[in-house]
Image 1 (tube, rainbow, N blue to C red):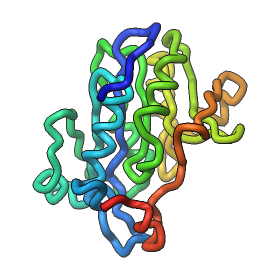
Image 2: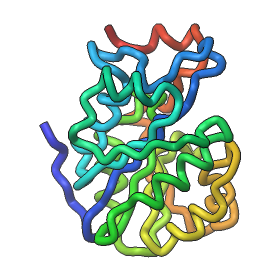
Image 3: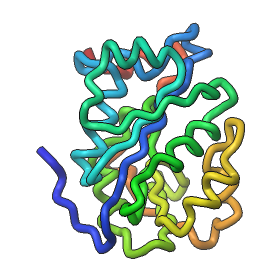
Length: 203
């Protein structure tokens, strides 16, 4: 079931960053991890669409060929980041460069956070109002994922994304403009980072 989209801006694109190599997982690409019977990347795409995104761009990197062979990514535009090992920043920049020209906002989320799903995406989209939007999910007052960026910020977001910093540089510089939308009641921002975390994935 798709979440009802209540949005005051034009097309909203979901950007799923799924390029990581899972170094602390023994080199297992996170996009390939099984969750609810399918690769985790499929789940992430589905949650962005169910949350109200009009389209999804997914950035692959580590084991991209295996991900493409195992996962059904037909509902997304796939971007391959050959520089994925340099950190999340390069994947974010690659994803921003691939956004469609008619989109007004992008919701950025990470493949290794299955507890952050459609309900949080929908809540951010419902709060969107225009191209100057900077909206982040909040968890008892702390900024987390997903994050919605109006198109006015895309160029700066791509320019400042580097290494493992991702969007943090822009969000820190624009701290006073970031609207936090509390999501602790509908999402759990844990990530799958170590072997101990694998128990949080569903069979």
